[in-house]
Image (cartoon, rainbow over all chains, first blue to last red):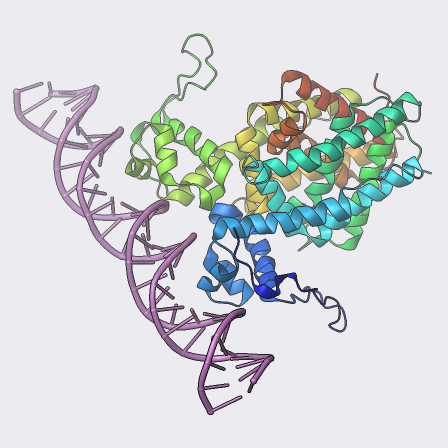
Length: 224
Length: 224
DNA sequence: AATGGATCTTACCGATCGTTAAAAACCGGC
DNA sequence: GCCGGTTTTTAACGATCGGTAAGATCCATT
């Protein structure tokens, strides 16, 4: 459905720009639009975001968005798609191999890091879910549910083997997800309560430690 | 700033309608408008919500909203005010008297119950924070921060007395808040993952048990 | 039943927003 | 230096939305 430029499938030359700048290189225009859309949709939601704001953020004229995307919803879906792929690929995978504590701790740390590095994506995801997931419902059914089921089975094995205390596995991961996600969605409120402008690395470290302590404690695992 | 009807300060005759119906009695028109706004703002956010939808939900004409409220933002603020007052009064208070376990368990149970009974209010609150809390920043500073500080002091006392394991008190309550809040904001996704239409009482019971298990475990408390 | 404030509706306006039409600018190949 | 496709902009349209003007309806009081 989406109109696509001819050069879309070209290999992106990422990271060749010197000295890892903070905002990603934004190689081509389409990515620049998606990056701008990420911020605007993250702050205002689908209906609240305006194409004018996105265009301004991307440094292009408003109608130029329609050269790359059919309409606002299409742009939103493309953004969600990019977000979910990054999410599922880099973050949500949890391989059961390796030490139980290491697996859990790494998972929690990755999630908090994602909240720190991509707060807008996390907010978009949260807003989408809060609105009843009208655009990613099928993705959740296909991907997230499967990954959850795998994790549930894993925890049940652990419990059956006596490695962890019995627990509702689905709720365990809902809670892990909620806690880590909160450090993106509600970072503003947290900073306000801590009387800071924004959360710093020390805050994220404390978050990781606290979440790990709660999860390990709940499962009856020692920290070591 | 808000235009108010003369009868605004009358004592509301609530609960006198027979047989506790599910939707609250909606005594006067202003409350009906606020109830409708709660749903619409909860689903679409401030900018996404339309006055037409709110008016339709309240069963009044669109311009009639402006008889009770100056504009859309004023209505939104009034709604937030009502929500925050209910929140602070009924939910967020945590009196330190009484058994430590009982205090924590009751607090968690109250929060989950609020998520179950008032999901729209929780979503509005979340959406507001996600947007950077432009309308309730001062409230957070005045009220929520104070309540958090009180809780932090309480946990620090517990830790100093050796009653609980050392923990970052602020993050502990951020996590409790995140977990309980999630069962409102993300109930749709959870239901989807559990292949249900909506969460049932058993789901909320499991949520309470899991959160209590994590918190008690993290603090080194036994369940009894 | 006439009055007058309180409550509520119909009709409408101006601004904004998503989107389209049309053409200008760019750019490599000849 | 012309050409053809790609990329980008200027101008503008129709729909929607927040808000206003003006008046109708209700209702207690007399």
